[in-house]
Image (cartoon, rainbow, N blue to C red; front, side, top):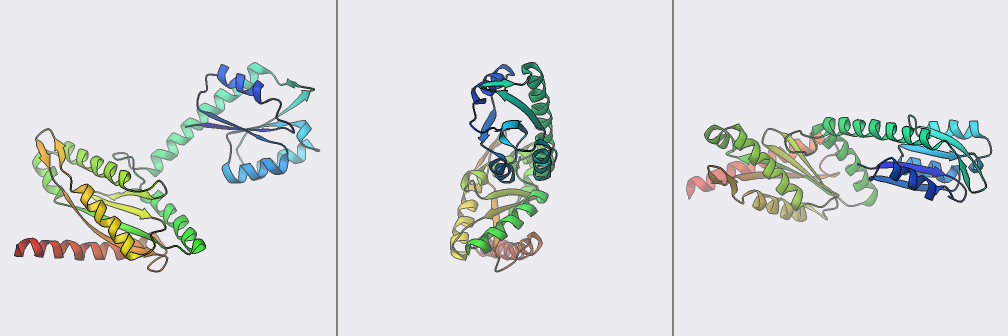
Length: 278
């Protein structure tokens, strides 16, 4: 987790000085960026945000007005104004270090809380709440770009038998393994979520069409079907999948999951019938 610091200064001559301070504070993971003036700083804050803004008074005409605009754009982000005299930065070094360390600790704690609230604790995958937000964003992008996306719903076949036979620790290991395999099979722009129990959702963006999404779903099924090594020996688990396209077949999580779940159940019954006949 990086700490993002934005220096607002006409020429950025305090960058080496700040870099030395950050090293002295013991912060290895940080991103230090420079904005030459207030308009550029506002643009950066809107696009990326920041954990701390260091504002050189020489970069703005009226300090109070600048502080108000920055706080409106990024409420809660500390803004520390300072003065420069020639190439000298007139800002108490020890005070700045304490300020940076305190903000860094607070931001780390905040990020941990946000991550815990938006991710499944067992698998580390996105949870339903985060998935719902991801669907809203993905649907908006699909409409803007004219490229459909797909939601793949996966249900593990026979998972209860693993829990009953080998115990919940073995079941948890299988769920974590499935989550890792799903993550490896998709792009960084896609989202893998644990929907609940032994159900997973994969949100795919820019899939060209239903056939393309179905090919991805089959690859996900094949990846899950690889044996999982347990202390008792290898076990094999299968997944049944169903998919829905957005925005043509739904625009929110509830509608997309309902359609994909219905197809998944149909595929599961068809597989059982095929196995019974065989």
